[in-house]
Image 1 (cartoon, rainbow, N blue to C red):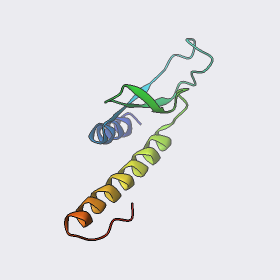
Image 2: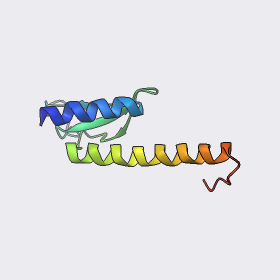
Image 3: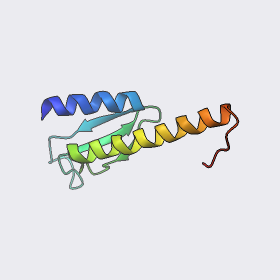
Image 4: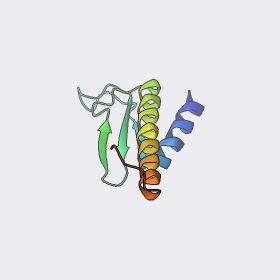
Length: 87
């Protein structure tokens, strides 16, 4: 699981995010001991505000963000070549 977390953290960094794991549950009743995803540019939690994400949730977030990035990239390429943009 640790290798998987390192791999996911690396992917998140490429997308402009990082993740934090809270191991200690005594700090707050809202802390579920899981992961939160943080936007590194604005330093805000974008998913898992209660540290309630598991690695599957993080992987799903990455997949969604990669899909959005791919759509934006193809849209920009289409605009560059004169194709209409539908986004």
